[in-house]
Amino acid sequence: MIDLHTHSTASDGSCSPTELVELAHRARLSAVALTDHDTMGGLAEAKAAGARLGIEVIPGCELSVGEGKRSMHIVGLWLPEHPGALQARLDFVLEARASRNAKIVAKLRDLGIDITLAEIEAEAQGTVGRPHFAKVLVRKGAANSIQDAFDRLVGNDGKAYVPRVRLTPEEGIRLLSGEGAMPVLAHPYLYALSDADLDETVARFKSYGLEAIEAYYTEHSQAQTAFYKALAERHGLLVSGGSDFHGDPKPWCKIGIGRGSLRVPDAVLDAMKAHRRSRGQWV
Ligand code: AMP
Ligand code: ZN
Ligand code: FE
Ligand code: FE
Image (cartoon, rainbow, N blue to C red; front, side):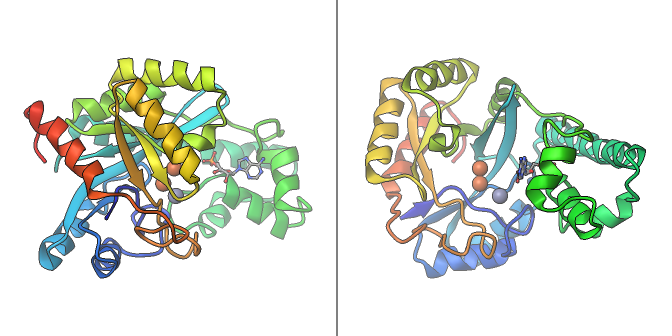
């Protein structure tokens, strides 16, 4: 059994990379991929823990990409130790997020709300974003609820909305391919695409370099897993699978087994490795 989708404290999980690899080892997984959101910051630690415990650790990440109103996630597996172009682009997106936060503060102050960036930053563990604004706005009485804060102020139709710099799916997939990593379409059920739109999207993403679809996933039923396996096969893509383990933020989701019934077979990893070897890529 394996798990190719997990998050540590390097993004929004509650386990350190070391703790996460220890959990994977205790769950008797033969391999685990660390795939933190838009960061590779936990990979060196995870790799060291894997070497110490004798469990295979695949270095990965989960890129947030978007086009129009749609947000999607692309998991990348087998990242190199020094992903130069990818790292530079992620750094830029992070800087853009910081200046966006300052713009949101300015808009809120223009609306007569007494709020500072420091107050927002004090609310966040890692990446500062709109959920933290919403929390502070509720605490200050400027909004009645988180939902109200989004509806009237920081949501996409709110008065203090500022769009975020995002990678497009094409850029995200091409960046991963350019690093020699394997781009995977994460949790496809989440995008609520019609069958026709899904087929169009997968075909288009494949033309950018998409190599696999995450058919095994905590929230997928057996029927969904079968559906996404068939989708992958139809498009000549590999199958991936993982729990999206986060620790405390998603207490129902256990590493390797998700809500209890997830099982990602070793054969999934074997097929990926065979594909990479056939292309002369490291595994
Ligand atoms: P950001 O990355 O700063 O744009 O914030 C995005 C996050 O805000 C999402 O992951 C959601 O958790 C949250 N969010 C976005 N829109 C809404 C909404 N209408 N109501 C509640 N939460 C929202
Ligand atoms: Zn997350
Ligand atoms: Fe995701
Ligand atoms: Fe995830």
